[in-house]
Length: 200
Image (tube, rainbow, N blue to C red; front, top):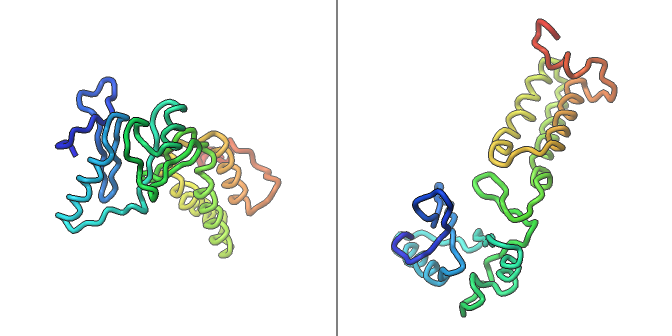
């Protein structure tokens, strides 16, 4: 990619421009409005033909970066730059504001509502708790199950995405209710419940 005459993205404080980030078989490419999308596709086709790999157009997504006006123009014209003759291939979606896409476990996009991207993870936690509950676990069992579900299933997402306060409160309330066997009224306050064993 660095052999191409791509402008990429220039970040203040960084010596080199950003053109691509790679992890396993996932690649994110950064283009400026002055770059030529055709040159990029040409290079990708050449590399795929030479290596026998296949460029998965079905997993390709374009995320516009820039002002809101520029993002709207890119969505409407399907071009990096209105002056360019070539449009993006019709099979490649261009994300609108508010539409997230998955990248290395995190949900990214413009004006993405963080609470919305947590829905799948919360549903996964809820399903796991319901499944474990069928075994009628003891209080100690419920404690361990909470660590295995609410704790572990949200850890990576919280690391890469961040956890909004309302999601944190929702998960905390769900965990407390599960620990107390789905009772609506809990006789022990949170501070006592979370205290060390010799104090709680």
